[in-house]
Length: 74
Image 1 (cartoon, rainbow, N blue to C red):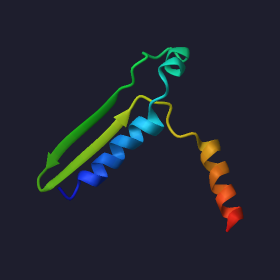
Image 2: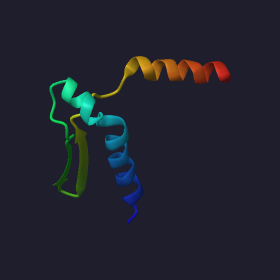
Image 3: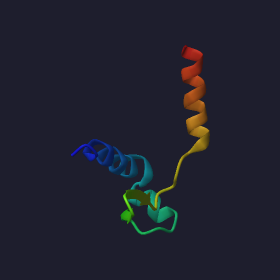
Image 4: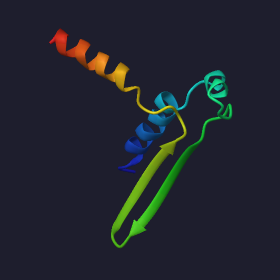
């Protein structure tokens, strides 16, 4: 229960920021439907969770512009 919010955030991030629109995916030669893979692994007392999507990834130029705009505001 304590991890629910974190899992929801990671899944939402993959859907909202990772997966492009079906039209954009087709333009890029990808299937129209995106893919999100969630993997769980246990090693002794540790559990790891990996969220991976087949989206475009982080737009570094857009991220940089947004950070610079926020820095200018204060």
